[in-house]
Length: 221
Image 1: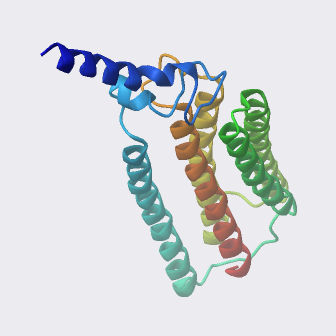
Image 2 (image 1 turned 45 degrees about the vertical axis):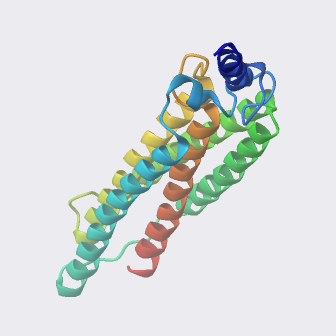
């Protein structure tokens, strides 16, 4: 009976060894070790990724519905008028693609347990996301200055709706980036590595979705 008790105590101590900084978080991550979820009863990473996948499927269906409406409306419309897309949209696209590169760099720094560099690249990703949104607002202002408004014609209406819908979803991604970059994960029920992975998946999806929308708006004029 005594031997059994000693063995159980040894197993408990082994399970709590992750507090020293080993695992996915590495040294200096304030207890964000790979076994944090098991110790605290947090939801495992695969559950968060599954939830994100389901959420992205819903977002994809929403934008595919808008795309279908765009194609059908153009096909039956007699008042469809083309207009020149603002050139800044291409610069905005480069900014957003650059943010995908910086977020991957941030993930790599986190995997190497370099929290300082992780925060730098993560903050740069956030800044690029905000820069993209600012560029989109500038594109709207350029169109309005050229006399192209939401209600000007069906083509301009779809442009504003599609870009606004994407911008709102990207803004949600920026909120997630802020959460991951400055959250104190010592008191969280989610590991920093898990939050980083989920946010990065969402961000890459938003980047790819924008490229698709830009091609739709440019080639489908």
